[in-house]
Image (cartoon, rainbow, N blue to C red; front, side, top):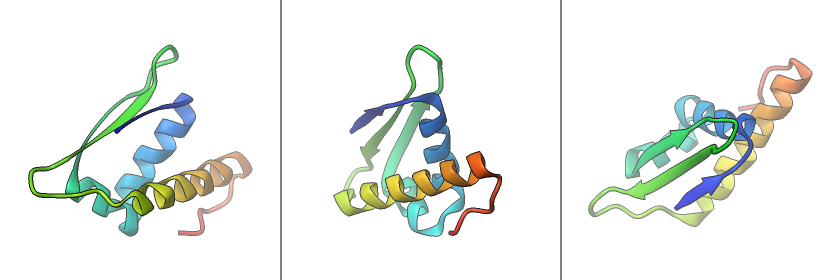
Length: 80
């Protein structure tokens, strides 16, 4: 699965994948590739052999990434 988005959003997703325990499972079950560029920013998830990514986990990734973005914009500590 490939998600194209604003560089700030992709950056927030990467940070959450590295710091949020719930989202770290995504890194465990998938190979994650990304590019942060003004013209083409994306994040790509490829399940490892024998692993399966639960779509609910991507919903939570989006939720925590939004929380991270809000925290950065308002200079607050994220809630996770």
